[in-house]
Amino acid sequence: MNVFTAVIEKCPDTGLFIGYVPGFAGAHTQARTLDELRHNLKEVIEMLLEDGLPLLETEFIGTQTVMVGTDE
Image: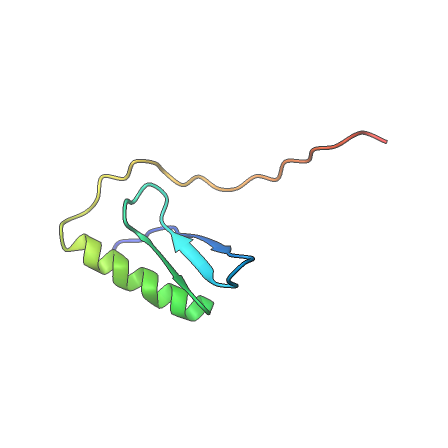
């Protein structure tokens, strides 16, 4: 079993969820719900894996919170 980490965002204009796997060219999709997005991501990844395991261009490490502003 292969495990991939997907980044999920929500478009403020369309309200759609957008998901992509960092570094995996072509592994991206969108959907109205998170369940539909998960299903779509699984389908697109399975399709891409038909050509073999990808050589990932990057490795997802995590997220960080960055505070910017004045000290008052």
